[in-house]
Image (cartoon, rainbow over all chains, first blue to last red; front, side, top):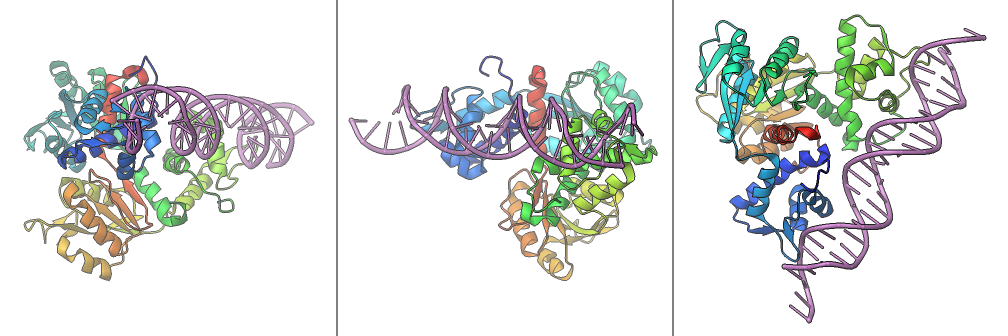
Length: 212
Length: 212
DNA sequence: TAGATTGTTAATCGATTAACAATC
DNA sequence: TAGATTGTTAATCGATTAACAATC
C-alpha cells in the first residue's frame, strides 16, 4: 500500500472480484490482461480498475497491461491470503453445516476446527469431519485453540452473546449470518451476511424493474 | 415514490435495515421514533435517514417524528412485501437446504414450492416438506408453476445454465449463491451472495485493523 | 405558545470517470 | 520507432451531511 493511505471499503469489496476474474483467466491460460479487457470481463471501467490497483502499487506495465499470475499473487498478498485462518462455527444447523462444507471445499487457506451448538442431540456428532461441541465449552475451547475467525449462524436472540464470547476468546474477525446487527465492542472487523436484507432488496427490484 | 425519481441502490440497500429496526421497535412496543433516535440505533445519520425516507414520501410529522407501525407498513409497501413470492431453489446440497429452511421459517411472504438437483439419490426426497425434483424437469415445472424467484445454489460450472433455464422459465428475479457472476441476459434483477468475496474482505480487514 | 423535529435545500465530501503525459 | 497501455492528475458526478425554514 502506498504510504498509509486509507483505502475505501468500496475498493476493498472489489478486490475479491478481481481475484476471481484473475483465477478464471489463469485457468484459461491467459498470460496478460489490459485494464480494458478486464473491464469487458467484469464490468468496472478500465479507469476504475487502474485506480483501484494503483492504491496498492504499480502492478502493470505500459503498453503491455498486467501479468495475470503476478497480479493474482499481488491481490492475494494484499488481502492476506496464502496463510491459514482457523475458524469456528457457532450454530450447527443447516446454515452452519452449509458454511462448514463450503469452507472445507473452498480453499486450504481456511480451516474449520470446530462446530458448536446448544442442542444436546447434535453435541458430539461430526459434520463433514468436524466435531460439534457444546456452546458451553466455547470459551474454554478458544483459550486452548487460538482462532482467527468466528462464524455466527445462531438465532437472532443468541447472536450477541455468542459474539461476546468469540470476541472475549480472542478471534480476529467475525462473520455474522444472524439477521441482526451485533455490537462487537472491540476494534475487530465484522462481516455481515443478512440474507433477509438481500432478499428484500431483490424484491424491491422485482417490483421496480425500471430501476435496475 | 416521488414522481419517477431514480433511487440509488445505496438507498434501497438501507431500506431492509430500517425495516428490521422498526420490527424491533414494534416488538418493544415503541410507538414513535425520531430520526435522531433511529440514528443512534442503526448508525446512519439522522439527516440520511430523513433523506432516504423522503425519496418515497413524507412519512413523518414535525415535532413528533415517525409512527413506528405506520413507517414499517410504508417500507413494506415500498419493498413490495405483503404479497406472496413463489420460489424454487436449484441445488439441494447443504446450502440449498439451509436457504430452504431459512425461507420457510423466515416469513410467510416467501414460499419455496420445489427444490431441484441433478443427483439421482436426492431426487424424489423431501427436505423440510419440499420435494426435490430433477433439474431436467425444471423448465417443464416453471411452465406449469409460475415462479417469482429462482435461487441458484449449484456449482460455479452449472450456475449459468441453471440461470438461463430460470430466466427462460419466466422468473422475475434471481438470487445467486454460486461463486461466479452470471449473465442473466434479460432485464430481471439478480442478487448475488458471494460468500468467498465476503470472506476475502473480512480477511483484508483482519490484516489491516487500522482501516476499520 | 414554545419546543421538537421534519422536509428540503445548499454545502461538502468522496468516489468515479476522463484525459493525457509517461513509458514500455 | 510506433502503438499500446499504464499511472496519475484533473474534472465530473453522486451521495452524504449540514443547516434551517416550515410546521406539528
